[in-house]
Length: 610
Image 1 (tube, one colour):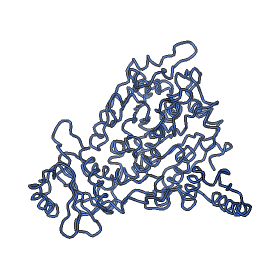
Image 2 (tube, rainbow, N blue to C red):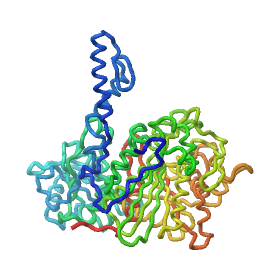
Image 3 (cartoon, one colour):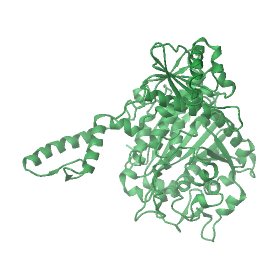
Image 4 (tube, rainbow, N blue to C red):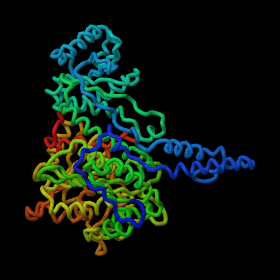
């Protein structure tokens, strides 16, 4: 089993059999808890003896502590809950059902999302909603301007959540996701367990994917955090989500919505969970449970210290302190999917998976360490995209992913500024700031991706990371920054990704990697080739989110495959900084950029089951 220092790697080969779904128990992450049960049984017996002896100390699976200890209560309760169920049994997205019948007793609330009631005229069922609402609007000016609750004949709840204006230059498809999110939230507050989301067909004349985008907004509300599920407090927020369309048949919109949401669900589980629940070994367990043999995704884990030191030296520097703590020890998780048919596209994804960022020796002081459990959202995005791939089964594409799972701990063994470390590409790096660990964690995996890309068919490499605070300072909290190298820019990658992001309610801003960024990282002395970072926060450094992309290119050796090289040697590369778009702490992560990447790379590559 992967996890011991003696084991170099574990590979779960893909199989042509069907991929697991969240309705298939085979995709649940199952952890053997028999040892924990045994420890509890032994503890109970020992405590009986201690009570007979009159001692006020009780044995626990962790240590002997006072009976009234808060720590004992918390840990005992959590471990007891986990001993009663496997970690993710039944933890899956709310089922999505297409329906063309708003009178069905399957659903207990209608959530209407539209920018105009006139769009309801084309369908008799929807027209009844308009005829019900219009007289009420004469007496209540709020209707049509904010979310309102109504009770229709037949004991049906109706929640009307208008989008607001959609015809201005600044309006985008998020009008529909925001309105759906608010509408479903109101339905849950009213006691609904089976709401049906109604987006009229006419909405697609304004926003191509209005129904899918609205569905994603609704499902963001319906996500139940993994730890809440495991505590037993809330098993699910709803029994199902209906999506209205004129025919209940499975359509491309429904297939796409399910696939993307299954990916975002995995993203939220990993990215949103606390730093212990999703420490690197637990992420490994989760991924191996998510993609068992037969899932179509192979999982390889590299956790051997010698192998990591040799093949991922910059990653190993960050991992050095945490590697001495078994439950925090870092690992590289490699994922591979190969679709049927002749491969005409190969996508490589490298995700930053810093499970907790203390800042290391350059420690995050003054309260700014809080929220750093979300520094793993880049790797969570890679995992989520692979779940979407496993569901959709796209043809003629190969996808390779690297999740760089590591904790940036502080202690006697932590790496420090001034260290000189040679990357796998042979580039000498001087550490300038240990809080710039994300680029260190990804750089060697990027080298491995680059090496594989040399012989791959039509390759494109992407790094995904919550890398800098500067990107939030530059663009705000809701946007992914995308930066292309020369070959990627030549084929308009960033522009096209931005366009599909707008369609999917997953917006991007385009940044440019310039000569200033390469100049910034040039080594200051003959000792080093590259300076990893300055010692100022990125948010107060000029071009603070662009120069890290130049660092990744230079240190991985991708600069030898840029636009100035022969066409046969060029490799397309894009860097995505999701520090803002991944979502605000402590709320559930958004899933960005899974929707946009799904549309960009997988659209037209998967079939709609009949």
